[in-house]
Image 1 (cartoon, rainbow, N blue to C red):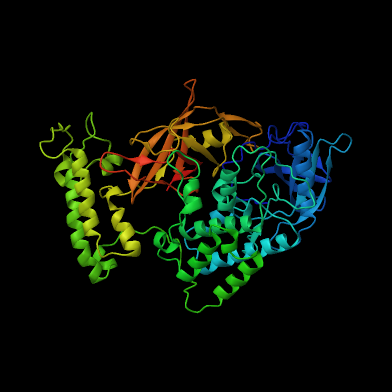
Image 2 (cartoon, one colour):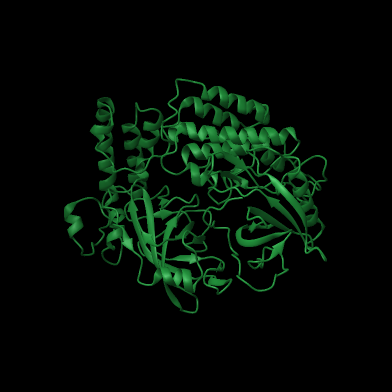
Length: 580
């Protein structure tokens, strides 16, 4: 279990003091000071669909993680709790979370099963791996350690069935990866608990053979997919791909959710095209894990571990290459490209110039746009920067927009002839870029009293995150303006135990967040400084916008252009003490 900063799923921090609440952990966390199995509850580490995890302190002062699973929410929940406890007794390895004990609570009338686990202090694998400065060698070492954990687990007959970055922690003491949370694990000695077709899991990590089974058995009563070791290996391939590229192997479908057709029939974009720093030898291991059938992948986690060991012994790979360096200011093409590519760039510039001139006809109605979004709305001409008067859009006298768009695409494709690999992909993607932006906004202090309001009055913690959205739109990009507002979907619950005020709803459902959006290097950044509840109560806040992978800002979606800023329909906001 981790002690890293609160995650977006941490909905119920602890109310300090008071009597022990015996409601299910998912609805009412236990008070600080509650004694369970000789340990004392100190804080909530996380809360999910099946359990709540607490940080507890033993009689001799040792800290542990204690997972509390309800026994009185139906026979399936109870059976799953007992199975998770039993699975933990089979696993002993430094790369697997260690189970320290188990029991029932309260002792006189048990309503919960508690499982005491080793407390893993450190970030989740994605928080660690997507941070600037991680090298190829470090990432491969972490994946190798997870492969070793799966090898030990599979040898004991235990499938994890929910391998993902959130269930892999990087131990601060030695930097090694630790696989945690066998809550949906499986062993053939135990009966099947899942009533539906698929066992619990996380959709982007589901293997192609599982999706194929679902299609072949749709509507078949009693059909149930049985996961195997290949499912865990495929999920680790998804993890590996994300660490190398910062994205999933397959984009979401147009209507939202998983693009099953792509998972079943299309190959993922080779990682080196997404991130040119990825060595081909490393890429080959990742892509083999993402093969469409288990037979095409590594035959076992042991074989994967051995392949990674052989890979690490190669001397033709630069293991010190940084996969995700800190963002630098763009340099001029001549300083970055070879002379040959610079010549091709001249032809490309001609095509792009034609595209921008055609796009310049689009003018935002109702007057000049606010400064932060003008980088998207205006062509980079000094005269247009100074002209703040509305421009009357003339009726086109030439070809219609559809014909112009087709010619534009043809011109860009012609300019891209002769390019290969990453250069070709970047060239073909150019029509979705936006004009040059202005300087990024400088560091900015929070509104007066915002930090105190968030932490003392609302009970939020610095670093705490919450999923939000722009509207009810799902499954497709959203067109937003510089002053677009975000909506808090569902109550934002918080319990600032340091205030003594206890658990409460900090911001209710449909609270609106007001702020400004800025564009820089193909990403949209948001700073939100006011929260307004449905009843009209306003609070000063200090929230920055993240994407769903917890990176600051969100990517401009395909289709963005002059006067049109398209972004993901769902984003995350994080509580900060200053805008950097």
